[in-house]
Every structure is written in C-alpha cells, then in structure tokens.
Amino acid sequence: MTIRTSIAAGTTTAIATLIANYQCGHCISTTELINDAHLLIHHDDHCPVLTGTLSATPDVLRATGGQS
Ligand SMILES: [Zn+2]
Image 1: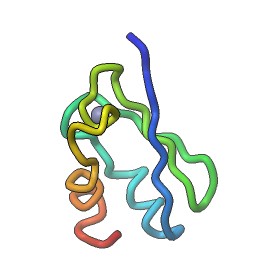
Image 2 (image 1 turned 135 degrees about the vertical axis):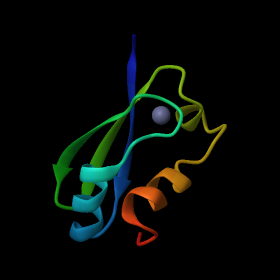
Image 3 (image 1 turned 90 degrees about the vertical axis):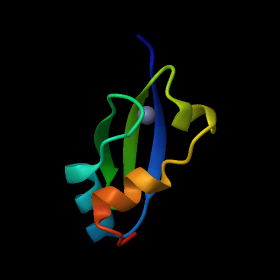
Image 4 (image 1 turned 45 degrees about the vertical axis):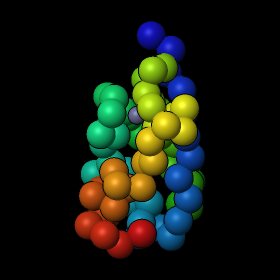
C-alpha cells in the first residue's frame, strides 16, 4: 500500500489539536508533526481526499471542534 500525504498548516494550538484528533473520514490516516505550525497527514493511496474528490475540511473541523 502506498501512503501519500497532505500538509495542514495553522496555529500551534490548532496543529496540536489536529495531531491528537485528526482522522481522515475516508481512509486510515496517520499524522506526523513537522514543526509547530505544520502537520503531515498520511493518507492511503486511494483516498478521495488526496485526489481532490472530497475535501478534508470536515475532518479537520471535526478534529478541532470547529476551531481551525
Ligand atoms: Zn484520507
């Protein structure tokens, strides 16, 4: 299985919340902290979020409780 990634950027607080709570709604994603402001999200190869078919925004909002 090929893992692909997307990057989320935001405030330190938002990133800390995301890395603790983010779960892609369309694949089994994992998160990796790059630095205080950037988070790497690893998606499965077939994930529709990666291909742009679906937005990751709902997952991000769910992870942060609506604070992005
Ligand atoms: Zn995904």
